Length: 327
Ligand SMILES: NC(=O)c1ccc[n+]([C@@H]2O[C@H](COP(=O)([O-])OP(=O)(O)OC[C@H]3O[C@@H](n4cnc5c(N)ncnc54)[C@H](OP(=O)(O)O)[C@@H]3O)[C@@H](O)[C@H]2O)c1
Image (cartoon, rainbow, N blue to C red; front, side, top):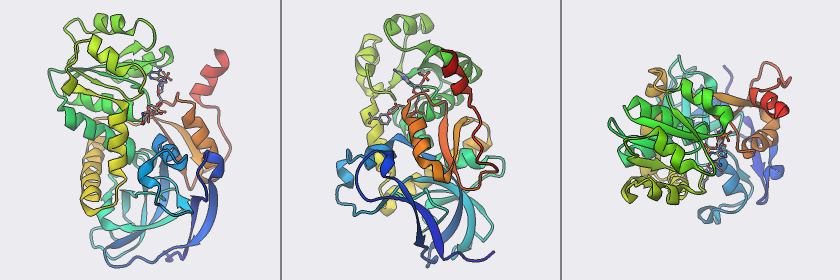
């Protein structure tokens, strides 16, 4: 395995929509002490990348341009100064930005081993969505005896959150459109259609009452949780969720260690099949703009990811396209 000296990275020179994203070839720093160089196989696509790119996040104002995109990745170690991650190891990791790249040099502290049974797509899309889900469930101490409502339960964060809540023994009600009813039922989640009349539909689905509410979508969550009698301490808004995601992108050693510890737990849960991450959008690296356009339609099932080594760039019709053509 030859050590690479260059990497293809997704960068941008100004705030804006996904149209500002561009692929560039840049020198790749060699792995120094405590660092590892990874050949990226899959990288995640998340809404927070778009919020940051658009200039909406004040905490990123001081970051110089060009900026890099993406924070979740999975790949193969090509150079390492850390005995835990020998060359050829399969790893999963996180960075503040710049995961959408062919090669990355990162601190070993931001990596965990990828279990063989976890697919590259799941591992590459796991960090932000999965650790946000895990942190939120931990924060609310969701467990057996809970009946929790999770909004956007078929999406990236919601589908992991809902499955892990079930795994902890909670009864889970997931809000979604009708097209996702069968998908959620297969995950043992009780589907409830969002929109007008939702409070009554949730009451009918949870005759014993609702003990917690996690709002991923961020429209009517707070009012609805109050109407259902959920205590304030057991409600988390999409704004709280945004804060969780932004914390996961901080690069001080304490935040990185927290993210890595939770990522390791997430990989153990994935290997134990406590959750399955459906990949409903898989795009070649150069189609990063299309991948964000897909996500921004707000009807993804599971995750949208980028692959650096797609077997074919031929684009297949996806299940949701078939659905959209019918409706
Ligand atoms: N406030 C914030 O700062 C903040 C932070 C992060 C994320 N978010 C938002 O939270 C949402 C979910 O996040 P994600 O990362 O899991 O995204 P995602 O994967 O894009 O979520 C898509 C899911 O949202 C569902 N959905 C669409 N309209 C809905 C509605 N009115 N009520 C409930 N669910 C609805 C869709 O279900 P159907 O296809 O069945 O409609 C789809 O499964 C995204 O829309 C994102 O923009 C907000």
